[in-house]
Image 1 (cartoon, rainbow, N blue to C red):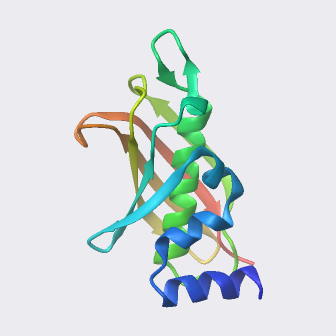
Image 2: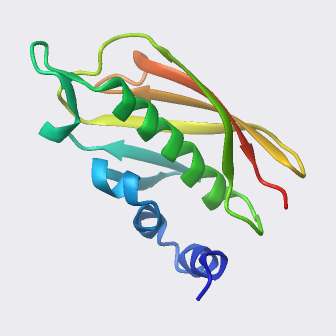
Length: 144
């Protein structure tokens, strides 16, 4: 079965968690998905291996960025009807505060979906959704 057919089957079965299995990095850092209304919220459960600065302790910035990038990819795949897997064109992140050693959440909003490019805003937070730890903007190639 092709990747496209696998994605379509997961969407048909409403298996949003199964999408994580398709991205090895997302699986290795501990990404999970859940539905809140019609939107996917990605969750990064705390794992000791995701710590970058053990003195604070704080999540590694690369883990936060990778988590947010994967959250955007998963959101695009789940909420659109594409014939190809999205590919990252560019990704820009602003770290607002240290990610503490606890569960982190991320939400993606598709700002523009064209024939070739999708533009997304991604927000990551921990205990309080009003206090973001990072915000990001990503462009993804979605055409052929």
